[in-house]
Length: 277
Ligand SMILES: NC(=O)c1ccc[n+]([C@@H]2O[C@H](COP(=O)([O-])OP(=O)(O)OC[C@H]3O[C@@H](n4cnc5c(N)ncnc54)[C@H](OP(=O)(O)O)[C@@H]3O)[C@@H](O)[C@H]2O)c1
Image (cartoon, rainbow, N blue to C red; front, side, top):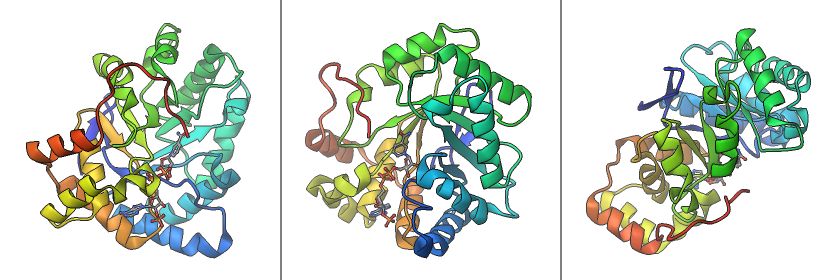
């Protein structure tokens, strides 16, 4: 496994497991648990979840998958913006801990900006950290201006990551957010790194996959992971998909591949609003 160092000095695995859409259907639960366990067995030891996913259902799936094997895992969860108040964030975190069946969440994120003043959320996160309920906190769906506002707050520089939409077909953050975060040594966590499957059927990706004898998803993830300070969290409920995703850690794209991918998915040529799903 490759690691990315968080600002608190803690190493976070560069490739993890997403869980959106898990915990929504009882009939899928066993398969979802198996997929997460398969991922962990293949070294994908970071798991990304949120109280929003399946309204707690995904956290319960994660709890079942990691029961008795918490050591060595890096758990990420997120608080709803409407729960991110001084008291609300603490209660929400406690509910998440219970569903996950753990004593500490490694990284706790504000899912997106809402009506609660940012300073209040940061205060709650710092309290959770001091109480040992979380080891670090961060944000999600923050654009460059949101990050500047956050960094100007007391304890704002304790933010450990910004989780944003990033894949071959959605490169807008390369214009300003990535350089700003890199300057502050803040890792970026790329969500929907497979474009929810859309980039996998693009001919450029398929051709490079064929050339290397790997799956298109392996190429799409290797492209994200080749960048310093980048964490990717693909979601897969299918075991073959999990295996193909894990293989990204072993694939080095060559300059010709990168040139072809740039031609098919051009880098941004100017600023654009942060894309969100
Ligand atoms: N912070 C936020 O606001 C936010 C927003 C969106 C997502 N996220 C996080 O990021 C994670 C990943 O994003 P995502 O779930 O939106 O999309 P994604 O990971 O880009 O794509 C998931 C889809 O791709 C399929 N897939 C996975 N591996 C594959 C492979 N090797 N070959 C072919 N298809 C494959 C999955 O199918 P199967 O499941 O059938 O394998 C699923 O349909 C989420 O689960 C969540 O944890 C965060």
